[in-house]
Length: 232
Image (spheres, rainbow, N blue to C red):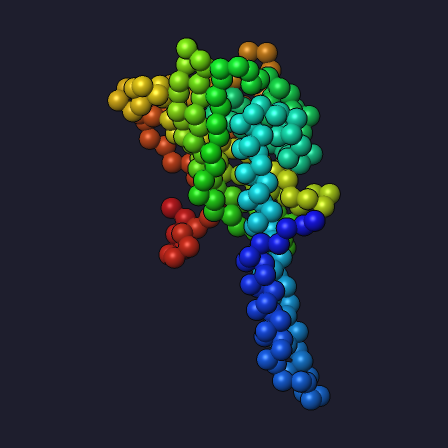
């Protein structure tokens, strides 16, 4: 059964209410055209609202799968020609290579922690409703019993596409803001951003050069300021 979000119900009810309040057309083509335009606008808002919800659930599912090292499940969320870029490891192109990237990561075993929280989504669906962009903040808790305890934070600037009847990730780009030892937190310099794998080269080099804490970097925004329209 497909779940219906409260926002969807609100918009649908709004559409029905507006339609009910309209006078019955009396042969005035202007009234009929205005009503059709209004209904079309409501249908567009409904479609984009549903897209927003599905994209948010898609990205959150990615976090839950990476939490538990369910790498095939995570890879299934990507489109055929997707790209993946995490920290300084370079750009991996295509679903098959992205799957190999995930499987090069450690698995989950006794005494390990890899929690992945994704917060503060800002999602914009394109006018045609077929693509979208999203910015997320991610925090991570990484640990291994008796040897390792780290916390990290960074920004996702992602893109999405509607493919084969479902929303998928078409571009995942994670910028590391910090990765530090839990006991030291931010009182000492953090670790440098991750570099390339030794045995799994990327398809393309990193798309940009930046440093993590204690240096400051601001990942580019996919959107303009919603009040001023500024992009700087």
